[in-house]
Image 1: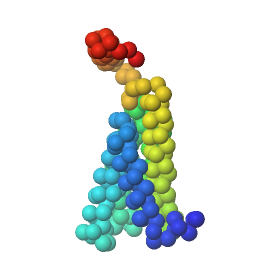
Image 2 (image 1 turned 180 degrees about the vertical axis):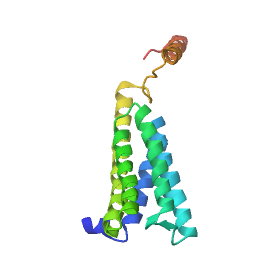
Image 3 (image 1 turned 120 degrees about the vertical axis):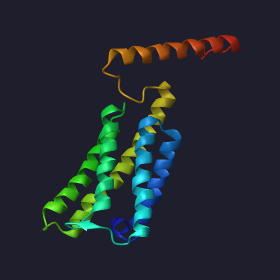
Image 4 (image 1 turned 180 degrees about the horizontal axis):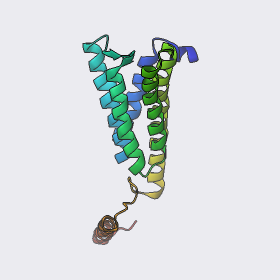
Length: 188
């Protein structure tokens, strides 16, 4: 089984997993799932494929691929922001794993003694786990939404004025729903 992940088919398997999970997250997910999925697809599937097709050998600085390091830092910044504000806990795991990939680039640039295999493992391995966490997070979101109905995508704001506005919108939505149900003669 591990031989399959170490073979030349690893990138094909990861691409299939990435597209499957990310498209499912874009379709069935809410805000946090969609942002995580869109970031993955934009940076690691589309931009990286274009980059590799244009430049077979990327620009390297101290044995670190600058484009790969830049995309990892950008994805890390986006996913850390999502993790801090999303009403989901799995996003912290995705952001934390992305920090491991970013730190791998820093370690490779700082120390010449890191083996290429170790560097590649530190950069590639978190991606597999991130996709698994996104998949599990999507399943949990779907189950929670099915069981309890709609719920907040983002944490409550610190500003009480924003909270009052969101509460007013929620009250307005529930009143509108009750009015429509009474007009149609149905109740839920």
